[in-house]
Every structure is written in structure tokens, then in C-alpha cells.
Length: 126
Image (cartoon, rainbow, N blue to C red; front, side, top):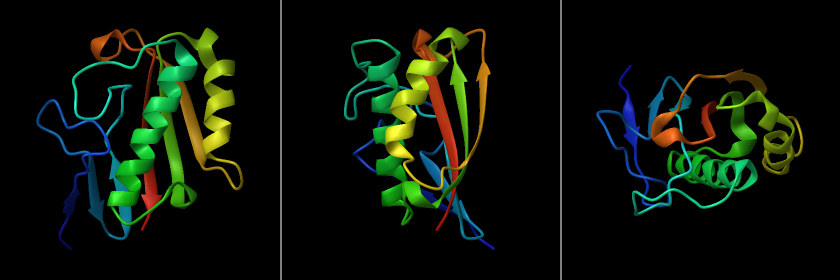
């Protein structure tokens, strides 16, 4: 079984040796997304709410470019700089996964790229 690489201009371009998403065996695996503005190397302004919104908009664009959607997500992993941001992140997250939400792990990490507040990766069905 071969793998395919997905790429869209509607999400931040990879800034290293990785792909926005890999499609394999009927699944889409997205790279962790941080709150970069597509087409730039600039972070979205604001706090955890704005950053979570931007990240999930990027995830949505990548999934759609891969032939999938948020409704097909089976698992997410959320990396937070500060677990005290969990409730605010969760409020925004809930607006993207309104019914039959995926399984999720949320962990606090010591540091994220560019010192952002949140990074999210997903696994979805095609």
C-alpha cells in the first residue's frame, strides 16, 4: 500500500521536513498544526481562543484537501503550553466538533514551536 502526501495553500506550509498530511490505508494523518496564518510565517494575534480557532481552521482545510473532513476525525491530540487554558481551548474546539466528537488526548507540554499556546494533530477516515 502506498502513501499519498496532501498539501493545501489554505493551511500553513510545512516549515521543516514533514508533510501537512499523509494519506495511507484509508486514513488521513495530519501533522501537528500551530496558529500560523496560511501563506505567511506569522502567528495569529490573540490568546488561546484565537490560536485554537486558527489551528482548527488549518486542520479543517488540510482534511478537506485530503478528501476527508472534520466529521471523519476519529482521534485528536491537543498539546497545550498551559493546562489552565484547557477550558477556553475546549470551548472553541467544541464549535468544530459539534456531534459525535472524536476521541481526544490533551497534554501539557514544556514548550511548543514558536512558543505558541496550542498545537493539534488529527487522524481521520477518508
